[in-house]
Amino acid sequence: MLEDNLALTKVLSNALDSRDSYTMHHSKNVAKYAMKIAEKMNLPHYLCEVIHIGGLLHDIGKIGIPEHILTKPGKLTEQEYKLIKTHTTKGFEIIKHVRHYKNSGILDIVLYHHERFDGKGYPKGLKGEEIPLVARIVAVADSFDAMSSKRVYRKELQLETILEEIKDNKGKQFDPLVVDAFLALFAEEFHKEKEGL
Image 1 (cartoon, rainbow, N blue to C red):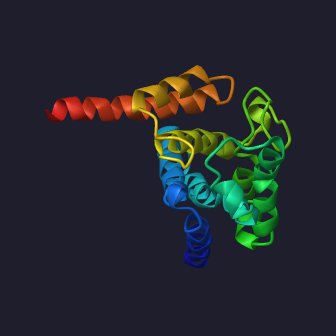
Image 2 (cartoon, rainbow, N blue to C red; image 1 turned 90 degrees about the horizontal axis):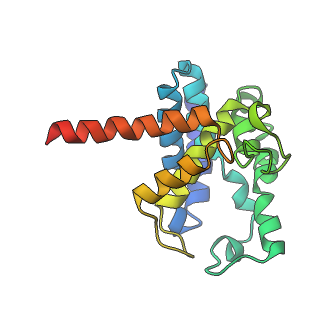
């Protein structure tokens, strides 16, 4: 049953990623980074699995957003940005009937990954721990991959710049505990590289 759900998840995720060459591997990257953060936070195995599946599906609602808006090279109008923001609720509506997704936390990821720790996010303006932990983890992974990928409207950012940006938004956009776990992963990688020299 779990394998069937994972197969369905991958089909949906690939359908989304194939629409836009600039974000082709975004869902897979977000799932991978989010799972690493969850493991670093010592979350139970089943929750790491939920985060992996939720990461693959977090942007599934973008299937319902017109392509010319998703791939627009310039700045979005206020109306276009409002439409983009509906991808969280559209995604929820698309997958809410899949039984395995219902009470696992996967729907929380799809619906709440754009909420902000300071309450200024969307769709509900949830604040702090009102936002489910699984969604707070995916929010950091999502932002990291978005900044480190080339987009139609800008080049990818340097790693140092991205880490600084995430650090600066600790307690504002992002949960401080999630940011600490995320930054610790990079510190570990850096030490491994130094030791390998």
